[in-house]
Length: 362
Ligand SMILES: *Cc1c(COP(=O)(O)O)cnc(C)c1O
Image (tube, rainbow, N blue to C red; front, side, top):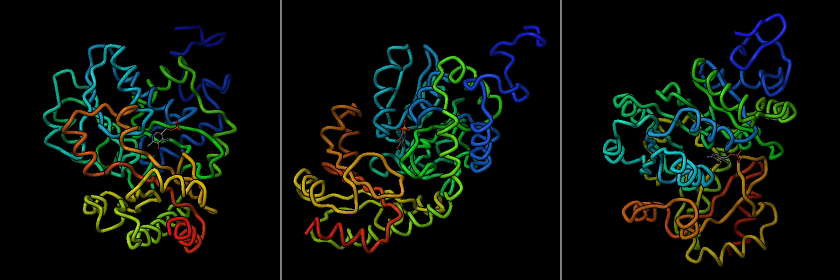
């Protein structure tokens, strides 16, 4: 223990510590963390410089050499690459499983399994995972469940209420909502979050800048209204795409044709603004969309006020990010085909978005 009158160390930092240094604590970042925890219904939250800083912080803080992680076989590419590369190099064993297949999840547990890491809806294919069922399985095996809920937002789903021990967000997406700030967060119990804050915020240093926290707080104020509009627009666009002769498949949790629509209804109060679609010749269509779209931007990222579309060829993703075995690849291809257009439907007038897609596709 250091002498509190003249000194302190990372061990002493807690809720009562004055704001002496922004990597240890900042009032604007604190305010954002408290609002996020309140929205998600968790005891605490810790913010990071990006979604990936939150994910790497969570994995490196909850796992150590000798531990085993079960992770979705389809997940955000950055998280996938981290699990394929850095974690095994650190002595952590990773099993990638299709988390929508509960029998496969149950078979993947080992005595050393500490964490199950899910993403629902999963980026980019919008496959869902049953949070409550995964939490029950994880807890029965002495492990914990983390859920990346970036696509759902707390307006749609509150994973902690369904049993998840950790909730992860890329604040860069819907929660900021305006495409002008990076951020990430991990939410959970006081004790766990304090440990993560100390280990990753204070020691790794990937903390959120107060200015970005301020931008994200501004975005958060309209999150419920924006999510309602995103979902309404996405449903209208999804229905248009389903009826378009050049489109072979549309995946949107709010469509009855989504293979897990029942689960979506049970687990999501809002179907969010993300959809994927396919056309016969994806690469050719991608070139056309990149050149001809006038309102929708052909660009990465998602969850912003403006609509964004990007083509993700299945071959490329399998090579760079996913490392699936033959059975997983077959199941992925059955769900997602040879490539998907990931469309983040923005807040524009839906008729304008539909007209824009129509002129570019026709
Ligand atoms: C974008 C994204 C991330 C990474 O977030 P950054 O803020 O870009 O680091 C993680 N998970 C999901 C589901 C994402 O869409």
